[in-house]
Image (cartoon, rainbow, N blue to C red; front, side, top):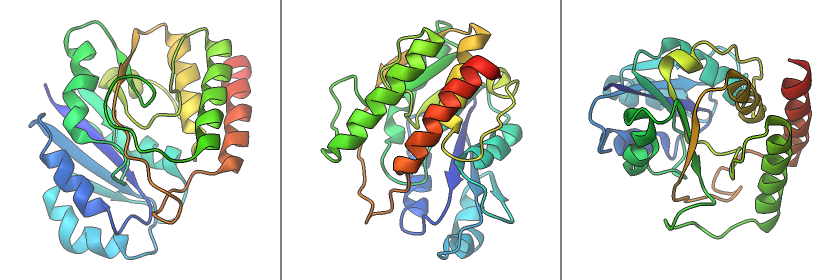
Amino acid sequence: MKLSVIIPCYNEIETIDGVVKAVKASPVKNCEIIIVDDCSTDGTYELLKSTVEAQVDQVIYHSKNQGKGAALRSGFAAATGDIVIIQDADLEYNPQEYPIIIMPILEDKADVVFGSRFQGSGPHRVLYYWHRVGNGFLTMLSNMFTNINLTDMETCYKAFRREIIQSIKIQENRFGFEPEITAKLAKTKCRIYEVGISYYGRTYSEGKKIGWKDGIIAIFCIIKYNLFA
């Protein structure tokens, strides 16, 4: 089994090297690491070129900033593994948990697995109350349209059989990817599982990028991709 790890990256000079080291230290040894740099301007591009590029299988460079969805679109197209997983370029998610996430696929019980930050007994950093409320609302709204019972639609950790994710056309360029892919997966009738994961969230001063405007866009995407796409 080969696991393709797709790392969308934008202005993550403080963490990208550490993330790559963490992925390489994960229990899954047959990993293809693909970084997609979304036109970073903080020195990440130079660090990737000088240090990180030689440590991974491929780095894809976008000539202009497009967003997380666009970076994932490029990464998914380049993946060659049996299973594809998303890994953010920060240190909020722990690659040591890859076996937990991909096990339902390896056991042929699932085609897609979501890693839920709101299930399980792993450690969770205590941070923004209204983010938690917003995540809960967006997940509930998505579930109402898809008729699936996820607890964390907005999670980074999503693992897919490669043929499934490569068969889906991703249109959203930014964080609208999450509700879009959830709606499109639900329509495929593939087997979706959810497992509990730990979560080491970061603050805005530490580099967190998603904001309330992305929440508004997510509502629009939930309606769009469930009813009109």
